[in-house]
Image (cartoon, rainbow over all chains, first blue to last red; front, side, top):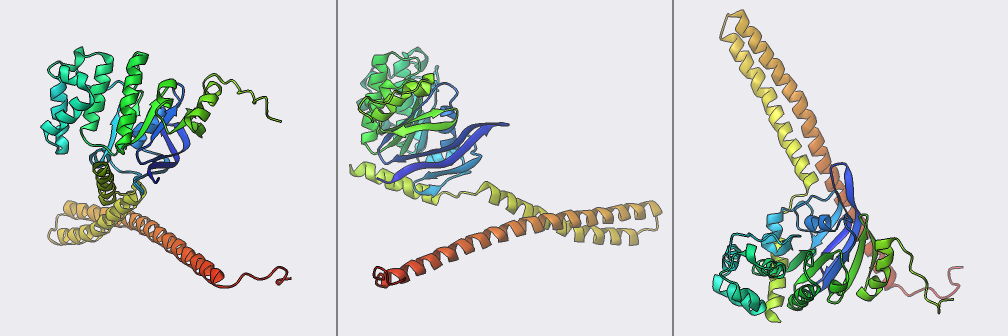
Length: 241
Length: 126
């Protein structure tokens, strides 16, 4: 499987402070990569840099086999790289239907967007005339996802999907993420809390202090998480010599 | 999933069509353009100053023309430096790419030549 999105030795920062110190990551077509890490590890900076919203100081970003350092965020978004930011970013005074209408800027017909969205998220169909500010946290996150998906992204960048949501809602949202990946969309998810995302991820990475401290299959990463978060060491298994 | 496959192909095509300017290349190009502008000013301003000083007998206006000509000379010096910097950076970047290309082609030729020959038998080289 070829990597639709890849970064090599990516460095980024704010002013005199470097936040990402040489990140290497690759996301294949239709695969889900989870980037986990504690608060302040640089997860959001990684996503905003991938989306073209934050300049990279070094290294390279490759999208569909092309180096895209310096490309504008709107160019990437138009091509199909979609960032769903932390905190959802829905407009509280617009209805669900109005949010979907906004997504027609991508050239798709409203009827097609609504049909796809309401098939995927039936709960949004029930709330179509309701303003987003009165939706529950989970419904707002669904709306943010739906608005992003309405642009038919090829690469989806999800920032803290589970923030402030109940575990059951998070599980439901990640089931949707798995279904979206099954349609061929490449997904990068950053999360602080691991359990929910590891169930749907193909690969996972742990980001600590701006460096990748571990990269592997979700099951491998799950065993190293305690060390990454708490500074604890993982004891060697008893059958090792 | 033909629709998804089409979308990925469309995405690849869109990314391939993107006009991406490397920030460092853009800076060099800007330096070259500013340098050219400075060089042009370095010619235009002294000529204008010469004609200005000739068209009047007012000493004050002639001194203004003198200052204008000196500004032109300064613009030419700064512009020349900027142009040289931008042009050299572009040339060296091109040279580096050309050198890399030639080395890669040379390695490919070498590997091609080696694969075309039979491997030497054990101890043949000793």
